[in-house]
Length: 509
Image (tube, rainbow, N blue to C red; front, side, top):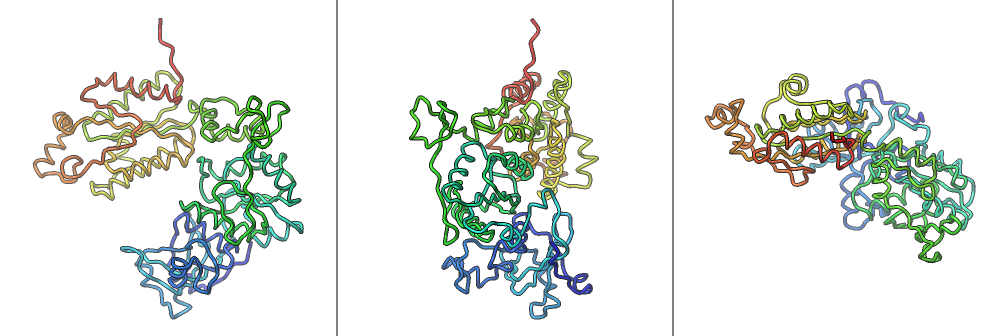
């Protein structure tokens, strides 16, 4: 697509630049493509106020959700809202490449140090990059490809198994409609599949569908099911959908007509999927739940062919191999001197002895030299340290290695970020809380840090003058004051084995 807007070089060169957050970039792409018609940019205060009060824009147009952009306050100072040549804000992608410019016509404070901005957006350059760009067609391009008549839309945010495919085929046949599959690609799906995996899985089911057009759309979930459903209906209508097959909580809100499918079940008499109530109970098999599908994949069992087409099953097994072959981050947290590093080293030695997994240990001098050099003990520096460790661990786990991390990680938010990084990489995450009491840690004090903190020679010491937020969601809790190190190591190894991350080891007779 090359419908770019070329600003004068001097304006573009001097304009402030900002990289929006992921959901703002997704909204930006939908604005630029025309999928958010009639919107032409991020909403200003008048539209947001009207939307909050009446569910409509300021001019009375129905619209379901706020589409907003928030930027740092220091960027606002360089904008002159009454001068079109000095109110442009360049928006860049995650790599810093310019993708759009906002003609800022409204600004307002939203929270400390942050401002909302409203204004029309124009594309810069030739569009984005990333997997399956050929599928990111604009609504105009898609509508030009659709045959006349009804169009059945399906928002495929999960892989399509046989029950969903049967529902789609029945609806398309009943309506005599062309099928349009919209695949959300702005974030991992509700079951954690990366967007590119979801696209491949949907394509793998294409030979089981009626004639269809497939489109990748940067839809993102906002956490409000009703608003998400209304927005999906709006976007589907922009792409030419006349009827939308519901895949959950979905409302039309004046958009395409929404069809709610009846629950299907597998009839083992002839291998067909039918309405559940039309099948005798003794011959009825219900569809597998997402949890049952994940459990089969985690244990390395094939998805049954009666439920999942083999090509789809192959893609899912490739994306989610058995746990024993998948990347894993084991994240030890606890006070200084709690024993977490000693336990982690023992676990690493045990894993290396067995040879079942490739192990990386992120602890001690290596982390301080390669990742944490220059960081202090402020909350911001501590969070930065944990984020760096979490990012490296997630990248190792992305390539199916096992990583043992041993930071103090005193804050819940930073630990949650580390978990999210691992899961976004398709890896597992196990949080081990080494809960050794502070008094015991102070008695050990091998590095003399507690003594210095008590003497006022060191500030920011966790447990002394800086808090430790105890985990409430740890997968394993070990008090190393009550458990010898070898037993603590055994407890971790037992957990890894019981949860399928490590092959069971035969005990000598």
